Length: 376
Image 1 (cartoon, rainbow, N blue to C red):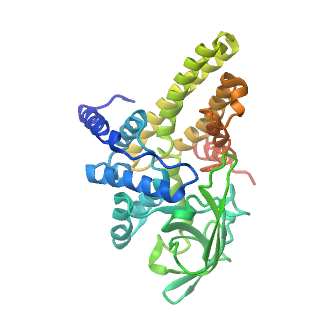
Image 2: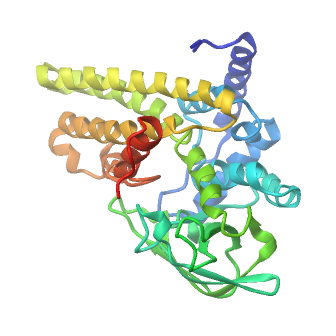
Image 3: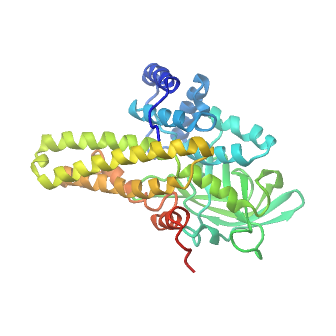
């Protein structure tokens, strides 16, 4: 498999680097983590800059390789991440582009790309986290609407969202994977209550969402009724495909910074620590090559494949190991929340749960890649 870049792709890289060098110095100061209205405005402003410069649709209309270059170069340059735009750009938008009607694509895609609207993800429930198909939020037809009641948890960016990609059970009698539908729910609809959740790191980018007979137009259903599980697999393929690419680049940069700090504070003299950092360097180099392999596969398939689960599984653990190594380098300073990497270490604990737990990823790898029989 050829993992080299074409002249056209390298030309895209050069033009992007030139634009970033001009655009980034003019950005306003980044808001504090707890200032979600400020963060929403900041993230939407950056998305509008990308839109005006012709880079906004790189997540959808560009080839997977160009998308990889974009994520690599923006991270290296220290550009803002997608932030509050995460669900719209990397989940809902690609799903609507792949599965939505012409009218749905016209209504939702441009506002996402232009930085006009924020989406949140309403998938997990208190009793249906890893086992997503066990969800119990109900939706029943009433004329041209669905009436939705239930609750969601770990709803990313719900407190600042305009829309929610929502999974509901539309047929309680059907086998559980066959009675689910994918809806786009307006977050200003009557009957919605949002309760932010504060994480161990002190941020509140997640929320509980309570739904009390919320009316959602049937026209907002993406895919056929009761075909939502298949549509959801499309969504999750994007989530586990290239969504973490920029973070691999960031981890490689952190690793270099860790080695520098270790030399400065004397922890580099510990041969066990040096071996640990060396192994992590090899780990992240391998993950980057795996990313390139997955991207090459996606070029032919048109969407990320199950190889994304291999990447997500290993990356989640490697990230935790990286920040454990950071704690070893920092020593007592690893308890100081104002020190670099300390909050990142706390947030890394969630990575073996977010976007599908490691146990679920192992099942996917076992069944869909290795061809092992399903458990009974």
